Image 1 (cartoon, one colour):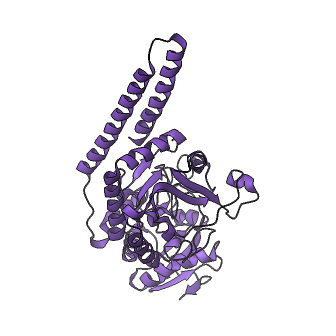
Image 2: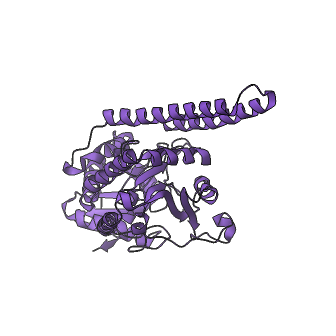
Image 3: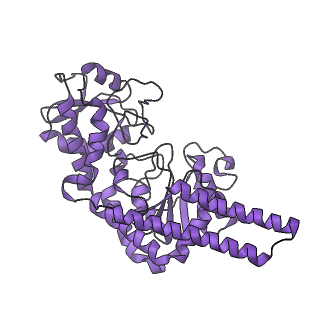
Length: 398
């Protein structure tokens, strides 16, 4: 639906340009006729956009708050490929792609080495809390930025736990380590990503400091160039700075200004400072973006680019109801038109922003994260078709 809208918008611009060239060549139409045609087509596009928002609202059924029910369907979907059972052979394939954990007699154990110790610590915060009430089980947790078992590449299925994936992967999504600590290669809480429980409070306080009517009427983005899909917005910011403030920061791979599109790297900006702006942009990085959930807490309108990469909570958020979806193929003009539309429909923008905030506030608490882990592990354990035996080479995680 979103792609069609953006292509329609682009076609308007192309046709107006074509009409102008035709008028100049044959002198058979006036400037007013061209302007009227442009105005009429833009108005039709705007009406179609409103219709799609209204249609999405009519079809929307809010989540129930009990027992992280918003996200239960994702557990069922991710475990569906393993409904016939998880054998020792399947697990041995999985553990070659991740870090091995065991829960034995209510205690958590991990293999000695972890690829990213800080990320393992972020995962272990939740696993140690849940272990006492879990059956004996073992899982393979991938702490890399990308999933491991791609169906289209011919990988044999294996129950690897990964924080993010597309529908092309067998990986089982778990709540990312960054809900607690060990986030990506940027600053951590309080200036960066981590401690979701505390960020929920600090960002929502900032949102009260910058209510909708006090926010700057422009788009905002800060992040490193982990994906070229972000270039379009940064280039729009350079040509239309009154519409968007989007700049690249450094990341661990930064070598020169070429890695920030030939500009000096911008400093990182705390999420609380994002709340000064009405429109916030979310782009994927290597996989799903860690920032997505944080942006909603500002009570700003979130523009989410692309729909392939997921975390476990993404599907509970509905396009046009909680955020504005944008195609990864969107041009600068496409994004500009959308920003202008919402600037001209300020009340509509505010309503969507508030729904997005309320959904994340109500359905993505730290309690919900623990609940998801609990439901995921318990259902996974019912699929295991072999006896889990304690591996004496593992270390106790207390």
